[in-house]
Amino acid sequence: MSRDLTSAFAAALSEAELRPALLFEGQFATGWLRLWSGLGEITWNGHTWAGAGSLLGIGGIDERGEVVASGTTISLSGVPLDMVQLAIGEARQGLPGRIWLALLTEDGSIIADPVQAFAGRLDVPQIADDAETCTITLSYESRLIDLTTPRSWRYTHESQQALYPGDRGFEYVTAIQDKEVTWGRG
Image 1 (tube, helix red, strand yellow):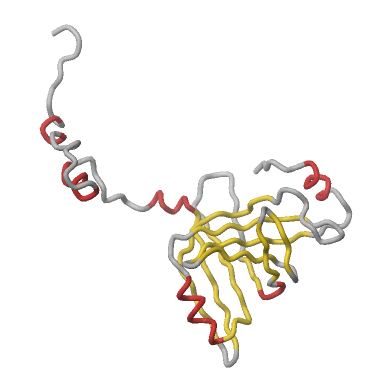
Image 2 (image 1 turned 180 degrees about the vertical axis):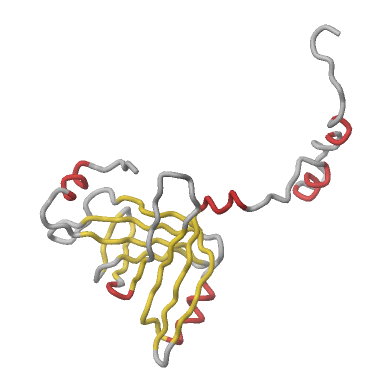
């Protein structure tokens, strides 16, 4: 699939030594969490990203030519047990998450504009714990998954009243659904 790459990003791809990094941004109950696959802090897009190093794991990102709703996982290992409840309490199903592929310069700064590799919504968190630490895995689903969800709202007076009590915009929909209308000359 073609991507819009900046000239600096495209030039970095053709270099003999490639320095890739992954950036993860996810919204939680109290705000955004921004992590990257290196160590220390890095600044990009007006935000500071905390380095998670090898503790951050990102599942496979499937990209196809056809329209398919696929997802991925983000995992954070080495989480202390006392922080697990806090982390799970912050997760809210449906909140957005994004992953970018970035390339770094020799001094460790990000080459302008990383490529967005995935965007989706939080599905479910899972915990795998052992004696001292645990791994929290967050599943993200593509927004295309919404296409498979049936909608319960209809263009009826009852549905409109549930959304906007007192609105009479759909009051006569049932009366006109089988009405024969002669258009033009009779």
